[in-house]
Amino acid sequence: MTESGVYVYAIIPAGEALPADAVGVGGPPAVLRLIRDGRVAAVVSDAPPQLRARRRDLMAHQDLLLRLTEGGPVLPMRFGAVAPDETTVRAQLAGSQAEHLAMLRHLDQSVEINVKALPAQDALAAVVAEEKDVRRLREAVRRRPDYQANVRLGEAVATAMSRRASEAGKKLLHELTPMARAVAAGPEVPGCALNVSFLVERSEVDAFQETVRRFADAHMESVELRVAGPLPCYSFVSSRGLRPTAAGV
Image (cartoon, rainbow, N blue to C red):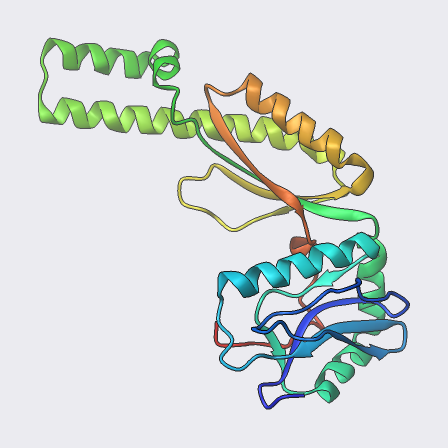
C-alpha cells in the first residue's frame, strides 16, 4: 500500500472474483485486489498520488464497475473514494455487512439507466402552430417589430417549449416506471425538464430502451431525450456504511 491510501472501487459478494485482466486507475494502471470481511469484499487498489479527475482515470473507474456488474451485483463507489488504509476498509465492511448484503440482493441482475428530457430545439414550427399565445405574439412582431415585442416573443417560445418538455417528461415517467424495479430522481439540471434514473433488470434493458426510442419518435416536437446506460447502480446505493473520503478531485 502506498502513502496515498487505498482507492475503493466497489463492494461485491465475497465469493466473486475480479474480472480477468482488469486494472484500476492511475498511470500505469493500478493492480486490483480484494479486501474481504465475512460475506462481502471491497475491490481496491493502491491510490495513485495526486489523484485527479482525468478522463483516463474516470474511464478506468467506470469500465471496471461495468465489468464487475457482468459478474454479479455491485455496490459502486463514486470516482475518487480513498480510505487511509486497509484496516479502515475492513472495519467499514464489518460494521455495515448486513446492509451491504441487503443492497447486493436488491441490485442483483439489475443495471441503472438514466433518462433526461429537454425541450426540443428543432420544433419552433410546431410551437408556433400549436401555441396560440406564441402565434399571436409572432403576428404582432410582424405587424410592428420592436425590441420589446421580440423579447416577449422569445420568452413565450421558451416558456412553451419548457412546458411541452415537462408534460412529455411526465408522460414518459408514467410509462417507464412500471418497467423498472425502482426509480430515483436525479439532481436538477439547468434546462432539463426531467432527470430520472431507473433500476432495470438486465433481461428488460432492450425492451426499456425500445420504449424510450418509440416515445422519443412520437414526441419529437415536444421533447429531446438523452439516455445513458446501462450504468453501475449509483443512484440506488445508500451512502450509509460507504464512507471512504473523496480524494482531491
